[in-house]
Image (cartoon, rainbow over all chains, first blue to last red; front, side):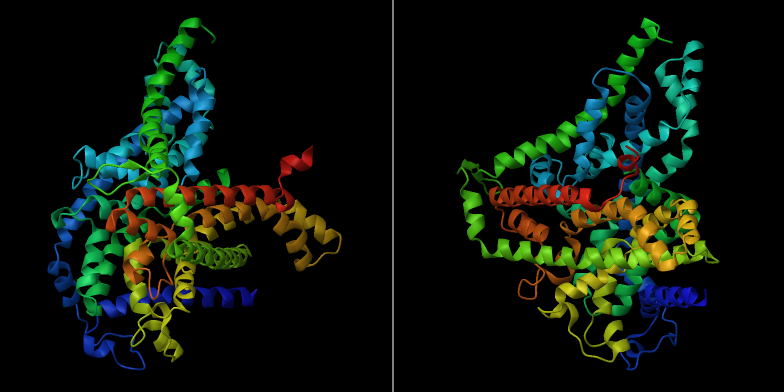
Length: 272
Length: 294
């Protein structure tokens, strides 16, 4: 058994070294950063890297922009994906399974195929440089790759006993009421999983904001960081501080909701 | 409960609630797909009017050296990074499945890199690959050029992508935990050791999970973009001219919308073909309990 721990320890060390490197660089003065062999403990701790990097470009504004886009997208995805999943799992209508199969086929579609026409469409509608192209699709059940969420929720809804619905219908409830008072309250874990992964997906999205947001005022953290990188290409202390600041919220979120992360990854992997 | 009123109500609500998803599919998937096929048959600059040119774009494409370069670079990257990530993820998942203490902590450590937002990840690795003061050269006491040399650029990006094996590992671990105990016991009773248990139980039972991760990995790596855009700009010497990056450049830098749409459709066909081959090949090695039960 001991060799298992030795192997895991080695693996963990290799996995964590880039993080250590990130943090030590974020807190070092340039002079110390460039000595060989490398030093690991900053002396002195250069906290000003953070304040200077984060004020050199309006990262606060980028943060707000990113949160706004993420919140609208998460709301849209959760609402429209769960009503679709409800329809596809618990309401009987003709053609249901065929429609669902067609929707599901879009999961494997490479995003590059729809990229250009979608861009042209938003351009024609005059929606460039707004958050519309980045948020509106999520109000159509996530559109494209978002169908995976419909699939996950549907799988989850199918595990809820149908007797609950029938009982509610006998009491004269409408399908909407069944959805809202029976299915949704019982589906919290699945809803949290969808929330987390949609949030992270929007938070990390790069190509979308790169295409649609050209005004610096409306930048998200991803493109903000990329443009910061191209401007401060040799200021490693600043670059690492800014990167650490972009990474931190996601890591924090993970530690609060760890259980759901693992559950979500497992769900996507096993159910397929 | 087959009251006709109930049935009618379900049917009505069923359609209404599915409308956003159906519209989303039509507007953001089916529509653009057809449109991009149509675009690919035109010569079209942004702002100009498209003119029909038939299959001209596809003919140009066959003669376009950069197209072949981008296709081969992307294939190289896929062939390198997918197997490496699968093996590393599987090995670590096997270790974690040995009933180790502190499983949650280990799992968290290995999962952490996947949480790093893509662009922050790219910026971090530019610094790690820095030839003068980067982490890798400092540790190895070498003077490797990493992403700045044609020969090592793609392998470097493969190393970088392997760091994010956590997702795959978590899926493998869940799969391993689902292998029925009694199968292992059966092998042990027959006098089989750990190697035999691995070969005759673990591996066959894990083939569906391996297959899933393989398909997801291949489809994902065929579409890499951020590394090329931020780290290397396709260089040095087009060594990292990834397919989607080349497409992006054609469409949004050189404004050749028709040509870029042809590139998009070729990518689509390639991915369909590769997944089809993977699925056909899967019958030979992926074990499904259902099939065995028949």
